[in-house]
Image 1 (cartoon, one colour):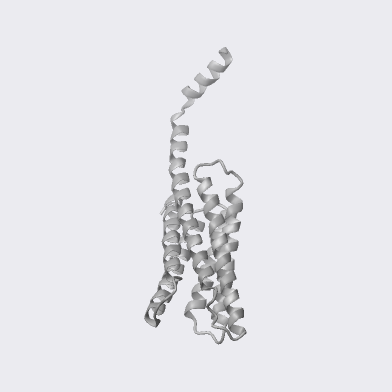
Image 2 (image 1 turned 135 degrees about the vertical axis):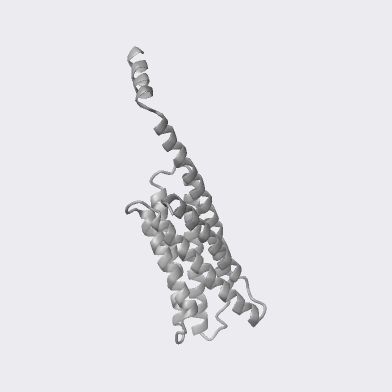
Length: 214
């Protein structure tokens, strides 16, 4: 699998994963639905982590985008650990919150790379996509932290689930925008390369000669 294909497939997997996770944060109406949504969230974060890892691997050389995708992949792994490992007390919830903050940091880091050349093909989608993902993950972490504090005070510990759900859908929209940005930028690159390859020595000489005559 070449680097361009890795980035496209990675972005597609991440988008699918964020949508699955967003669906899993819809308030459950029964215990059976709650278990189903938890499994869906685990699968969604697994797809996100795999997608982010593929995107990082598709980057040539060190870059903020590569580092950002690696941080996001690690954040997804942390969320999965919080959802699957049987930990005492509130440790599982704390891991999920930590994972959300790491994903937000990863998106913000990747955003720094996109801002270096905002006029490039697909960059508007990438910039808005990473920005929305960072905001969405931050809202999920804030909602999770608020629920945890509420539970410590003896409350139900789910009053801020709507904030988590809103954050999940914002992240999903951002991930889809990033996928569109990747598709646009990858489609543009072959065109640029082919146009440069077709310009042989004769065409370059002709351009030079025309400039001299003028």
